[in-house]
Length: 123
Image 1 (cartoon, rainbow, N blue to C red):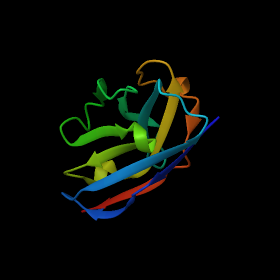
Image 2 (cartoon, rainbow, N blue to C red):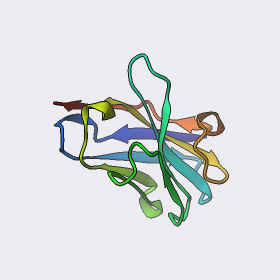
Image 3 (cartoon, one colour):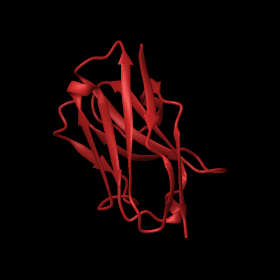
């Protein structure tokens, strides 16, 4: 019911920054919780950050806390991930996801996913 498309990925040197965007379309609801996950080759998909529909609640994986910031603009149906101090370990395909319900870091609880955007951090 909800279509998600990520953008903003690319190649950046270690220590640099990128901002990812995720645009939602289709049947959207005000109560939708959004999140970012990432997956590197040969590894399982891992949680990055999540945000409640109002933006009042945000949670981050320990590996990105203090470096990444999730935000959303409901008027634009868009969620963002500002990534600072990027390191090679951050290299992965980044996916945005949505669900009806509260904040969670568990991937199977999200019902809609974007196709992903590649982030590559060089040393």
